[in-house]
Amino acid sequence: MATAEGYLRRLTRRLTEDPEQLDVEELSDEAANTGALKAIDAQRGQEVTMVGTLRSVECNGKGCSGGIKAELFDGTDTVLLVWLGQRRIPGIESGRTLRVHGRVGKLENGAKAIY
Image (cartoon, rainbow, N blue to C red; front, side):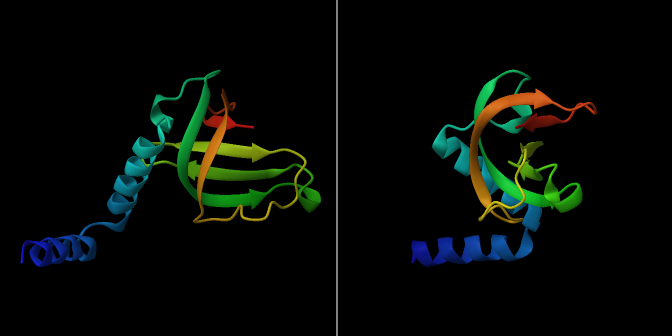
């Protein structure tokens, strides 16, 4: 009986709580389970592993010669991922959850980025 009540409580919460808050909790749990660093804690020059969901993916320039840019959200902050010289990467699309590893840099506007 307790498991039925627990299931009903979780289902009710899923149906009534803000979807973005649920995503944040899921991503935070995933990051904690993999030992990934939260984006909000990442500092410039630090080598990091992060887990998050791609919010947007875009191709810049003529025929994407400028590369691909994707916004990774991990529940705390966003990090811009940049693949230079790429036109398309299979599997890199909005809504995907990724685990990335690299060195954090900063863009001119102060945003965090991993190239």
